[in-house]
Length: 404
Image 1 (tube, rainbow, N blue to C red):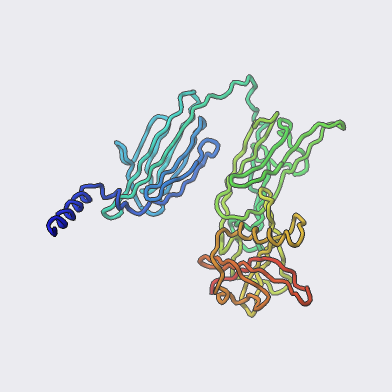
Image 2: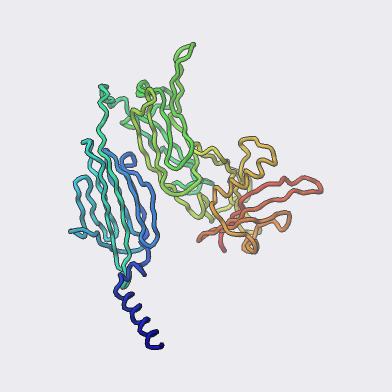
């Protein structure tokens, strides 16, 4: 019986050895970031898989350019005749800088059938192999021949970032998510008309600003004909806050008869500083300001962001949801809780975390959720009502302190 048992073990071991070891124990998954410089022609769709991640992209006739960077391996190989280059006619893929992939999709409106390719990447993780598959699907739709003349150059416009106002007016060369960012619409030569309606607007019924990942839009220009005659409204400069870090891909579209006639694109990168736009180091001793932050492209919530102040030389700040929709107290209490969770994302239980903070109230509060990063600790506070004198308003807020 023992001979049969050991023989069975030997057979299983041989089978496992014969199998592809990488499929059983693959290398650590490859982690990627990507940057699409032409969002009107190249779009990310989704990613699937874990051990072998698979990325899906859609490309239209306009084509464009994209870069993918492997964040956790210094080099890799393309599975093709040339390990550093791939060319299928409608796409070229080039490996640069060891762990970068550069994609180029030339313009092609030939009307050819839809095409797809898979780019397979692999790299060694010790004796194991890590893999990634990139799926690319491309269409070659012909431009509609509308019989209309092309849009003249003087009818086109640009969207530019005119500047930004940092939180607490700190000295910062780059904008962050709580800073007030200002945009302008100009002609193609960058000429700005603060008081007059620009001439290019006569080619449009409306001009609308939007951004990828934001739920709402903002109308910059509007032209209507009423019984009293023609009416025009324009905002040539506007400002907004953003409630997240990273790249914001902006679109400014000019419409005529319900169709987009011209589109201006602008990417703005927002940096995090210590936390959103807060930077520890300076605090206000007298007359601290309470800044109301808003986002024109997401009007669901607004927040009051307090200047950094100090208690016993320990700095702290607070972010408090604003009742800008004039809800009842009971309705707004629930919305305020949602507003903080929306701003912060998923947190962990705050149980036992109160001792990490030096400026939390000693009583009258209940802490619910906790977050942290390398420099900052954040805790969601439920301020309870004062049942005796009813002088303290029940509310939710985010309490923020630097890590000591």
